[in-house]
Length: 208
View 1: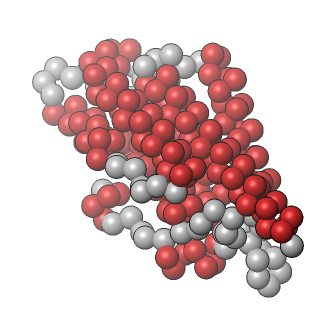
View 2: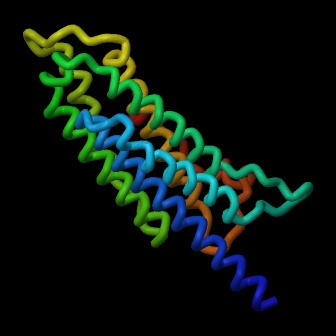
């Protein structure tokens, strides 16, 4: 009985560590893309993010209950985070150079705030700390939206038009990952059906 309890807690710690490693990698990847340093050099980082995501799925405790449900909200949220991040990285790589040059300062704010947010989120998952503050990230996204009103701002393209939506999708994904972990304690099963009722939903102001 002691061995089973210890193994279960050890497996959950490893799952949280892989989740934290994935989140830190996501922050670094977006920062590089926002700075125009994407391309083949990011391939190794993308592979590590995918590997950590697989290891989270393998090491997470299996939900108990009828039929031993395996579906877990935090894993689904991490999968969405990874997919939305790849769309966003592609959009950033497709930005026109003239638009990127004028938007450089705002893109740097977005990169720095998201990297910090991911680092704080990773620490929160490992240490069961409070949810990170999304304020700096939200302010950076608002600044991006405000670029359209600037005089002599070059016209964007489809990638530019998609940025605000993709950035807010990424925010929603990360929020869902964090709240999925917040409703569980170390060594406790994560049951998607039981977690839904206690996970706070994003308010209209947060997603608008």
